[in-house]
Image 1 (spheres, rainbow, N blue to C red):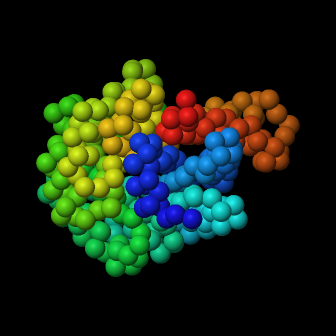
Image 2 (tube, rainbow, N blue to C red; image 1 turned 90 degrees about the vertical axis):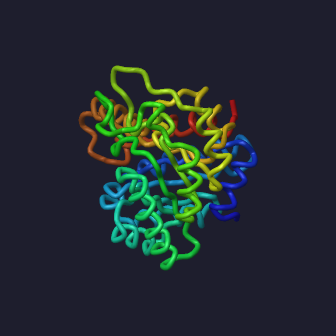
Length: 295
């Protein structure tokens, strides 16, 4: 089986994107894996998956436990599924993630100034690679919010105006000096989904300009709510990984409420969660079809 780095480069060459989906429990992991596995069978090729756990999600599930679960699916089914530490903000937490056996980690100092972000990320890459030289490390420029939830307004400090988006020359310098394996930036997306206003559009031209100079595979964060047209254009412009979290959480919440309402006397968790898993799978399948251009 190819490793994660090889699969990311392969996706970039094919002009497709690998789906990155966050979990906070076994039900989400089952939904994501089963979605990938079922779609792979219809396409006669194994579609790579990246599972993410934020600091909060990892603390809830257990970083070692999450890594062990993902590894069990990879080994038992010989399937390209990997796990990433999503938006890790301290060296202490990064050490925990790396030692738990993760395949990748995002060190996020994006709320800092550019120079401070560069300094912190450079230090983090050196530290993380000293523990495991093979792990992929991602760095990020541009704050786009910090929570995958339903938003009533734009988070304070989020880069949502074109003049605040990451500049190509910043991306080039950041990747060169920090030596990150993967790179993400502020290009129009946001963590979370808006409740009553339209989702923002991605700056496709900016994506293309950044990817041409940055020297590392380009990751899109805040994918929930982005239009199909923007996804496809972003992939063609150079995006190789797309993050989805809020959309899955929303499906989980709605399906759980419905299942509990329809089964008021049921107390077996696996029976209540069956419908929840089905609804989350639909979200993952829909996005994987777009990311892999199975339209």
